[in-house]
Image 1: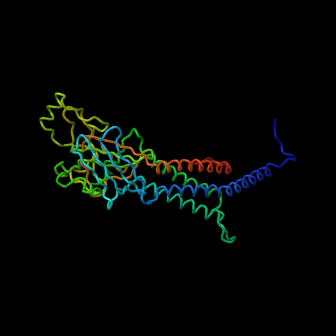
Image 2: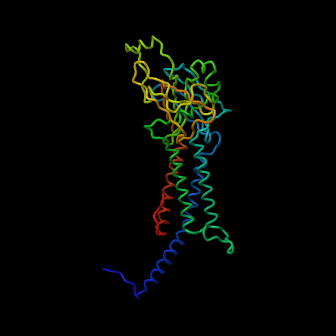
Image 3: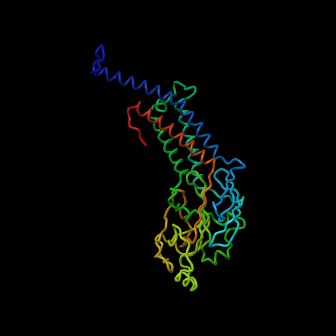
Length: 361
């Protein structure tokens, strides 16, 4: 069975008619996209509001389930942790209470990047709407390229990349993978009152802070990693060697045990060994398998990296504690971004089909 047009149309005329029909369809779809883009802009503004620094912020419980290792709370205002009190009862450190200094809040790198991306996305949509759909376009100065399907498709592709990166920041690293950002993005002691590491304690530990305090985002939740640190070249006394040999003492086992890491705080230099990405200089501990030399050069997905004037020191992680806290605002933000991404994907596919092109990622 075949379909023919009557009266017959010459091939050249038929091709011209197809192109004209496609052009009308693109023009109609471009006009229809105005409402879609306006709704996307309103949705992004709602997302921006969820991350805006509005007092009193969100107070989040930070506690380990079923034990008393970590108990406390923090307050997030926008992209910062502005205050909080956390009680620690770790096995390898003295019992202590941490108080976040309100005058020196902790900035969350992932949320800061997310804030920048949301601002960029809103600005991108605002420009697209103002150029492609002017309210009173002057006939003599109208630029056809700013209202063409190609221009809008390019803008939507940039917007899709921004939304995908925003969702990735909220997703964070996989739950089964340790975030390597702690080696360079751990919170400095000056963010606490009193300072987390007194000078005498800092020097007594071979120039290594006894505690790494690192905050990050995973699955739209605020995650706190606490690591008890010791210098990789710290001598092991005879009593410990004997206890390990006969089995009366056991080291705490975790996924980062018996590995050497290069460590420095986020915003303060740490005096110690030379910067060494190879992890050399350390050795295996008594009664344990040889240590694997591990370091994470360069910035990670969460930002960071060893800045100028900073030196890494090689450390072992004696004890590791992870505390996950659900943040309702971030969970809502993630859901909204997913829905906006789906709507944007449908609009991009429709526009690409009308233009007769393949959809570009």
